[in-house]
Length: 198
Image (cartoon, rainbow, N blue to C red; front, top):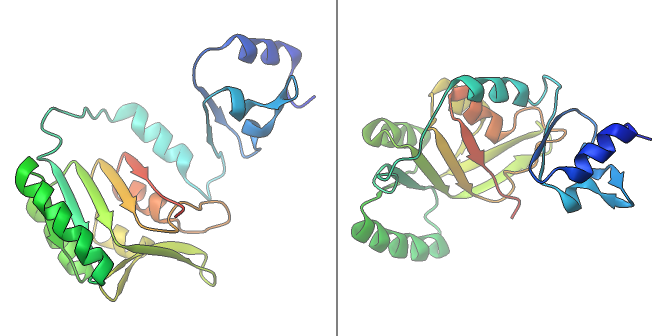
């Protein structure tokens, strides 16, 4: 009874993505006893201002960005940790950068991140660092050296690129968080942000 019979029939016939603007978990509405998200690709955009995804959705309808053949050379990998395990993978990543021509920057501060962004003007930025969320402030953040790259520092320093990939734990949760790291990049002008749980 959550959706009309007519809409149920339309969804059952649909062989494509479903975009829903709702704060209700539409993806878990059952059709023939199976949640819609198990049979269809559902993209739900919360309508509430808290998550600001409606603004991002509207912005993306007017801003067009095409990934060109030169995307590899327009990529910047930011290394934000000097821990041994990170250093090990950093060296391997640098070898790939030397072969394929993407850029890297080892950053130990927010200022160094900003300088790298200004220097390379990338289309795709990959953050390789620790990430987490603050239970007290209810915000997610990245760890750059000993500094915290959070919502306010991203917006204040205009740290953004069209495409952002966060290879950092704990950056995916959005529900119940006031200032998610993904929304910070959107606010600074990014068009797409990929976050991770683990």
